[in-house]
Length: 110
Image 1 (cartoon, rainbow, N blue to C red):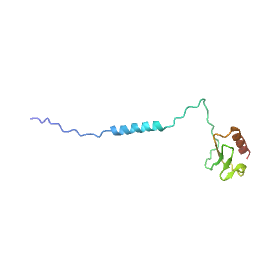
Image 2 (cartoon, rainbow, N blue to C red):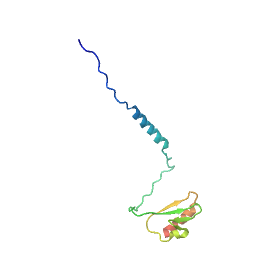
Image 3 (tube, rainbow, N blue to C red):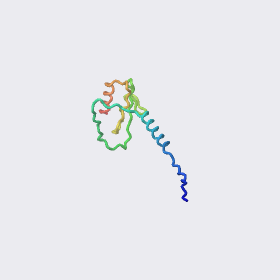
Image 4 (spheres, rainbow, N blue to C red):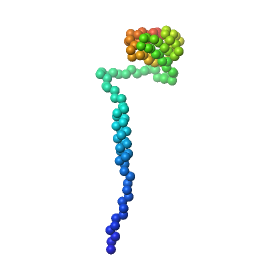
């Protein structure tokens, strides 16, 4: 007589938990991502011709009232002994644009 008993199936591990985690991560990153609106007009970003970026940049901070600081220097002293390296300007959002233009002009002359 033939033996018709089936051997028990080997139970495979479910991949459902892994799929759940993948979708949870996808939803998480979609929720925390900052989506920037497109520019209202097409703007081509300037390209720097300064290719040697090994030099340290100096940071010039301009406060809302027009106060200037570079390292430990304040006021007009920030324009003294400027090196020929790149200068990063960090201006307060409330700063008047004309004051910023004057500072940039003085930097160009220094």
